[in-house]
Length: 184
Image (cartoon, rainbow, N blue to C red):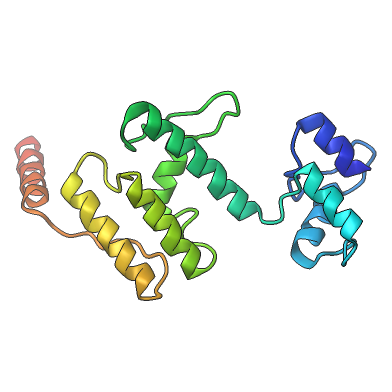
């Protein structure tokens, strides 16, 4: 009954793990137990069908990936590229697409967790959309994409891309050092 009330109020069945219903029922804990161990469900086909009808989310990580992917695809369709501004928030659900893209770039969010096969297929989906791994620097973006592809293919999973010193970066560092010396 608590899950039905939650869905009626919120319009979805993605119950946060710490959610407590107004009457004190720890619905979030129960949902977490159902997801992790199938507790309270077993092989009850009627109950499984009821949960499916409510839109029960069995794997929150996958659901978040699908949310991200849907918003990113819509952005690419509208703008013709995947260079999402970091502060972009998608209305009406207030999805922080810009921050999510930044997290994918820096932490491998959605790609670093789960099975290696999932990481590989998710990486390919991003690459097919022209996901930009490094701002507007296409060469660096391509280098990072290839690094991630190789790391996943070799079974290492998601890894941070090692920094390389380019001529431009070395020139900037030298200019900054000269500028700091001029101020001293």
